[in-house]
Image (tube, rainbow over the protein chains, first blue to last red):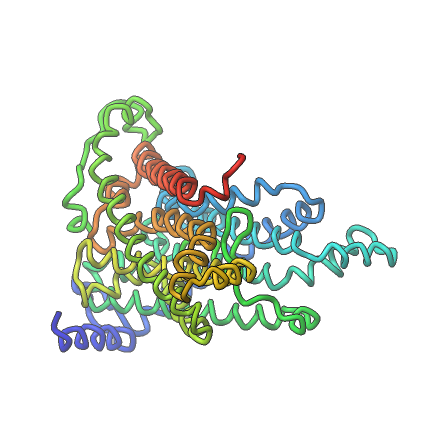
Length: 253
Length: 231
């Protein structure tokens, strides 16, 4: 518990991030610019997974939410999803899909869908029924109501779901090296190559990446909130209860 | 990696199904007892972390209930903690607290704070003004009103927060082997190419989560009797 040694550890990790060195195991260079391909892979698999997850979850949830069906499915997706360990999902599917990007992305899409689905569904359901009735009253068709009334009003919650999922996916991508995809997690998982400073450096980079994504999505979420909703000022707090879901916290970090 | 897994049982596979990395009910029936010790470690991690998280989150919630300006900063701080991926947080704590149970509990506790704090604050804020007024009419002091009126009426929200925090922690504790704290994740890592092992370790996590959820639901029914009258 010596504070001086702790400072040394962390300054060593920072040095690792900015300067290359020989690996502890010898043979290869690690640290500095060699971290860039790892970062690039980490971001690439995250973005691809999020695109696929959104493309699958949002239209389906919009449709169910608009029809007013699937309350049970939305609730179950939120509850069961939390307890399933991401690492189990990841290694389970590697048995079928082999090692590599496909398997990692498949597992991450599965883990990303529940928060996006639940938030989109809840977002559509909580749209004021009067607004929908008014839209119907002025002669809008079903698809028009979805596109011009329900979707804009649900956007803040949808972005909340994407925010949770993105942070989860960044966390899960850290496990990539277990299935043969070299992400920033390589420095953490293969500490015998990178050394303790490299391991710490990997952890710092993953943490910074997740917090950056969170902040970016918070800004996007604010930008996506329709002006009408901002004036009313939604309550700051929405508790998680048995029937509703928290906008930004629906699944594990 | 293997150094972290010293405490768990390493097995060998023999029969055909097992050499094909398949899902083998026979193997599971024979070996599930190997998973009891890791499951016990897992349970300890979850219970200790959620207990600490509850004490801290509840205290912060009650403080912020009286001083509303605290809500923003506490939500922001616990929100950042919640955002840091668990593997990163376990690793970041290693230079400070070293490998072991303590490091895992610190990280897991920090993840429960946002959920519990937020539900305590919302629960207390949603107590009907009439109930508070009635309390004042009965001559209760502010402290008495907190414990006899506000907290009991906030219990459903508080339990909801505890339940979410518990299931979340069960899932996260599967990565506690990065902090050298064992658990079902460590057992899973002994053979990540063997489906029976993955399904058994992952399945037990879900079983643990469901059981703990039912325990909390039972506790809620016992302590929040008025909610369940006539059901």
